[in-house]
Amino acid sequence: MTDSLTETAYAKINLALHVRARRPDGYHELETLFAFAEHGDRIDGREADDISLTISGPLVGSLGPDADNLVLRAAHALKAATGTARGAALHLVKHLPVAAGLGGGSADAAAALRLLARLWRINADAPEIMQVAQSLGADVPACVLSQTCFGRGRGDALIPFDDATLSGTPLLLANPGIALATGPVFAGWDQRDRGPLIPAQWRAGRNDLTASASAIVPEISGLLTLLEAQAGANFVRMSGSGASCFALFDSPEARDSAAGTIPFWHMASRIR
Image (cartoon, rainbow, N blue to C red; front, side, top):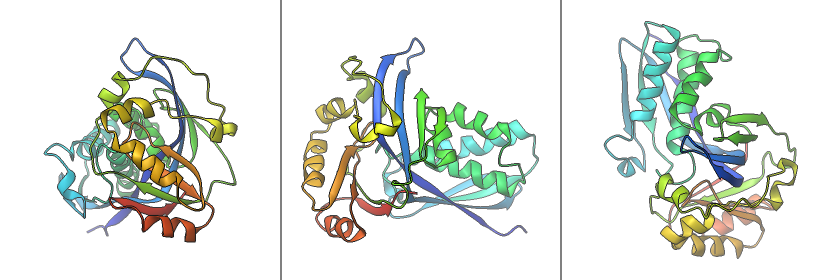
């Protein structure tokens, strides 16, 4: 029996997210700079005759009845794409809130793909992995990489981005405890193109979905204000389509002090 393997489903943040136009296919033309926390959900897996999934963890109660579909879809799709006869018993430990702008479901699916590639002895560079990732959702390819990168198109046309000042930066994630679906947030975008994102100037960037998300969940505005007021916070944004927000800090001590002021879900980490 193969020993169990483990992959972290790293929490995703968007350092900037520019919405440029709505596409004919219903998606939006985006420019975004992805970064990833050192922490997130966890996927464990071992070889088995069939594909199965169990779930535990502190936020397992936030999952709906179909919340496991993306992980299972990833496993079944990779099996079909590669022609392997192997199966896997997968277990998801849920630490990230769902519908939160942190890529939780996408990160889980991506971690499952990375784990299954190891478990089923598939080359990590096999094109089937990214092909499956693209079929599962716009954020999944970036989550497979789980490294800072610039995304265009739907967000799945990726270019690696190296900023030595980012790696190891103290990071605090926070969510007001309100699930926020992506569709209504994009539907509320005011359709104004406010200009391109220059990756090297990401601190001057924007999240063009903040106003739309805040109109649906007003608590986002209060969370941003709370994070901006923290000593040592040098960069504060909403992540993705919300409702999670994040702050970068000058030091781990400042981050940890700020974490003590957050009255709802939060996670202290660093940028990978």
